[in-house]
Amino acid sequence: MRFLLPFLFSLSFLSAQSSVQDFRLGGYAQILNDECIRLTPDVQYVSGSAWYENAIDLNSAFELVVCLVLGEKDDEGADGIAFVFHPSMATGYRGEGMGFSGLVPSLGIEFDTYRNFHLDDPASDHVAIMPNGLPYHQASLLGPVEVPNLENGKKHLLRLSWNPLRKQLLVELDNEPVADYSADLVAEIFGNNSKVFWGVTAATGRLSNYQDICIKKLTYAAAQ
Image (tube, rainbow, N blue to C red; front, side):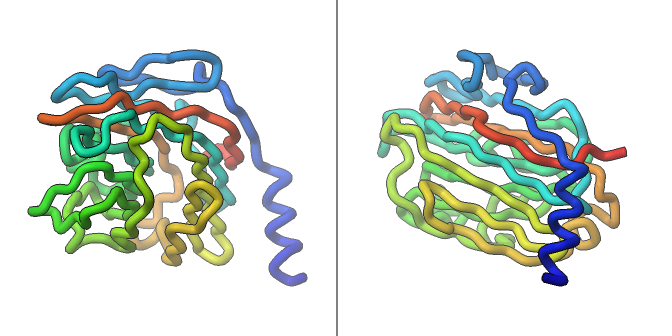
């Protein structure tokens, strides 16, 4: 109960929304409908981003529920999507960088659909938690964790949650846990700055796919 009560108390200060109109779009990103944003069309060498326009406070709980649609081309598709936390609404390098590479300080949760051997990618689609815009897996904080094929044209349910009391970041994909990472993100990644923006970035390179995100639920505490 000593854990439950302060956690519930913090929830009273949270807000929730699900409108695509509350996102700042960059690159090739475009709104598809009331829930979905297409981050990249099925075109080579493009990138797109959607940043939530209000900063959040990582000293409070955060929960995001979305659906990912990562195209229909498996072996001939690329590159994937990343969920990024960063002090500003910026987009990094395209291609294998998936729009988060080069962002410092940052935390990226990548859903990688293309194998880059020089980045130590596994053969399968995979999830990894990456610090400071580093795309190679020698730098991974967690992963890569191999997952079933994501490039099948279907919606894949994703839940991200951050518990600041436990300092725990959880990632569930299609109702299965794929990442459980514990660290003081505010201190270790963001230099004791709890105010960050979050966004979704995607990119293509020599190979491509359309890549969409559909917003279901967002619960957060706005930064003051």
